[in-house]
Length: 177
Image (cartoon, rainbow, N blue to C red; front, side, top):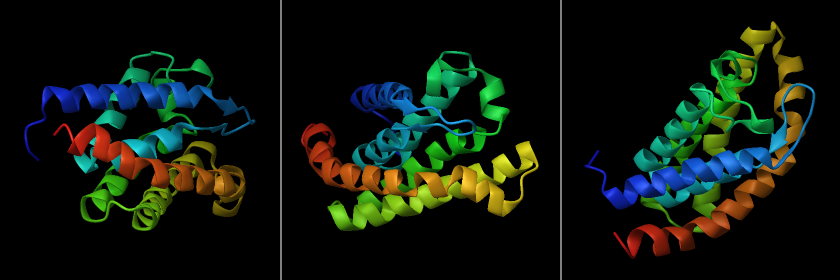
């Protein structure tokens, strides 16, 4: 990993803030809220690449860990991270990194969408495993609570992020180095 420029660090902060804002645009559900955070995660990876994209999400997670209300429904603190949905929040880092690895090779919508889907699958796997441990749920029940209700919405987020990311990457990263 090369040294990060001031510009890249500022972009990481902006994408951490974007994730915090998108986390608040939510439909509250009993166990796992539906929100736009994954859209920000996908765009962060698609624009910043693997290392800076993941760093932006590490910043987001750390801000929430110290108690800032950046998680869904203006929550924060370690209790959220170690709670039932904490694995999905940690999965944001992995999803941004996988998306970013894709954009390093192919910066066009279809391959990027596939990379985002791979990142989402990793986030789902980490989050669902964590949810099962935290709640004692069986795999089928966890999938019905934490994955199935989100598939269509996450597919839409992938489509939007895959369409926006290449242009944003050209304007924010490649053009200005």
